Picture (cartoon, rainbow, N blue to C red):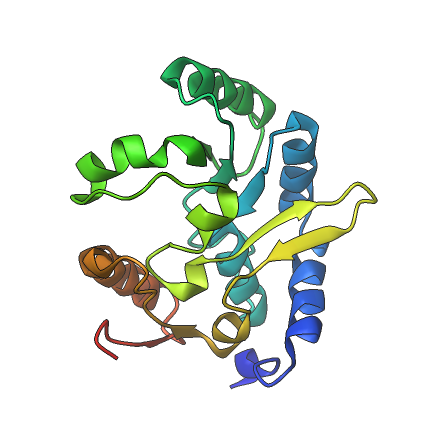
Length: 202
């Protein structure tokens, strides 16, 4: 149960602990610096690269265990594919030597491809935060970036209690997201058996 040692801490302390894990992990610190160098509007490293890294630290696994890619969200009012593709290609060059592939998405364009990918329509997002806070599991809704002074800023619209408690709970912002949640829950439990998975209806 040692992996739960920070589960009862308050949010401020949990943010400090998470920030410390990110800062002390070489590939994550480098990724945050590369993101900052890209100077993207409302740019964040999001989801798996953040919460999986913390889980790995708390369970004494390799820092990159189970992490498929480094997701980057940004927000640019130019919703053309050409503009987004330029950013994606620039990111691929920037992160060419990264430990994991980088996945870059303009949150302003999400509503354009979302129906084909997930099967239902959503309203246009107004900023990156709106996209981050609507992922299918609350634990997914976490992001990080560097501030100008080099300190790490953590975005956690639902707090970090689930992260440090190893509780995988549904985020029902989109009621149609159940299938996506179940798929991700199955994979997460297989990779991190310490997790407690909550049913969509809970």
